[in-house]
Length: 334
Length: 179
Image 1: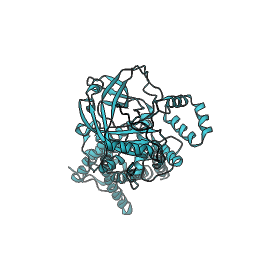
Image 2 (image 1 turned 60 degrees about the horizontal axis):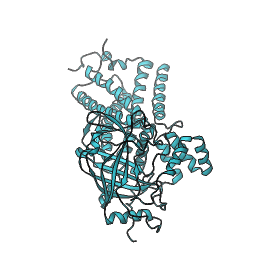
Image 3 (image 1 turned 90 degrees about the vertical axis):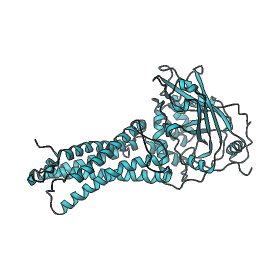
Image 4 (image 1 turned 30 degrees about the horizontal axis):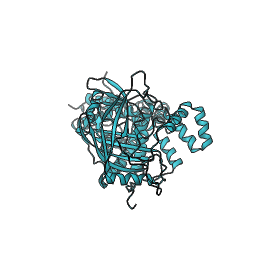
């Protein structure tokens, strides 16, 4: 009798305790929740918005693939053809009403491919990412929320993050969405029809767009300029694939740039324009998880890339239980 | 086909029922581990998610087979009495409901999130409209059903162990092959 009670009790404690431990609810293991909690506690909680890159403008357009990408990837998006694309231009930060600063631009895209396949990517106008690992990224974000001194101390103790910051500061600056270049940040593995695997980073660069620097009128000047620009006509970009050399160019560290003389493939033209309200709502309700890839593109061993999936998922999970934020309209009455 | 003629003490579940029970036991415990890991992992998340979806489909297939088997083959009569009999029957019904519902909810929440449902390299149809509201509800339901399933399984294993080790009534033997 007694032994039976002990056995039953042991099973209960192990089962329930084990589950909670694996969920990371006990102890100090970093999870998707840790990052979103940090965003909410330092940047504020804005109900119905995504927990980072909250301020955004939706766009709609297409990708005109020229077929050149097919030499490194069997993905349908690189076969010559035209594929529908929706996306959102955003700036980093939790506050959807924060005033524009002229920096922090980002671009997320969703390609609709044949057979219901999708390719989602979330890029930023920066040459490299801020930290090589999720742990160091979390430490950097925590230090930043504690002020200048804590950040300086953190960067002193974490040379990879300090080096990344220098590269980002030295990178090209654009004060508009139209003129910025957007980088995949992470490395991906492209798989060709015959199975050859090539590490690839990609960039979306303006295709001769010379909009000029926008006037800094009002808190939303950068978004107003973009909204007015896409109402006048479409923005055109090139999708450039940078091919890494396996074994030489690191795929597991997004803070390290690859040599600039690496082979580059111009895969086609990305055309982005005004999104109708229905598309705007679809884009608002989409989680631009950069690990959602078509066949022919695979994840690399980049730990930041893998970690983006649970962090984006946690943001999506939280806002899905809230009333969705109204779709932002910019540049209407100027 | 049934084993109703066997004496009460020695009554056992049929071989198919036993096989399905133990396969599901392994699959569902793996699922609970993978599900909890999904909540608690960072770098392994994409890999854990791929396994979670694949084993989820396996649980759904096994659940359907098992419900079919349960309907066509009468199980051995319960040796329990009174309220315990009621609890055992109720928990069996609860577990069947939960392990059938959970994979369907999982499939539906992936569908509602708007991503293509791709499992173990195979494309499955979407079974829910693309909707962030639906996703929110289904994702929350998935978590609550997981906790309910965990509670049922812990109670089930604890009760069987208590009977088998504590009361020495050979309850576990009903789910083991004759040797």
